[in-house]
Length: 140
Image (cartoon, rainbow, N blue to C red; front, side, top):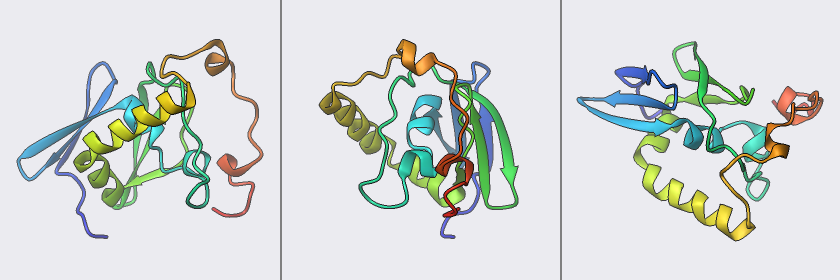
């Protein structure tokens, strides 16, 4: 692991963003950004080109935070997503490459003709998971 844990992790009262403090400076990451760049297999797939574009996440908030050992953070989101561990290296990358990664995401949304605004389909109750997101594919 190249990067240490942030000195401090703060959840905004609104739960709309997470602030990471590194050596005297801080970086705030919106919940939507953290959600669409979740390190889970459900979002990232199992290799390049297997990513699933996340849409309708503009209103998502952070429902919970849980440390995982001394190496990662588990984030639970208001849409129920809670798989994937944000290790310190990945959080550092998200914090320091936010501008580029967010611009890339917005380009992908536009190219797909999709929206960040939740639709009725985005708000439907999720079906029971028996595939990758539940660890059922055996690759976790």
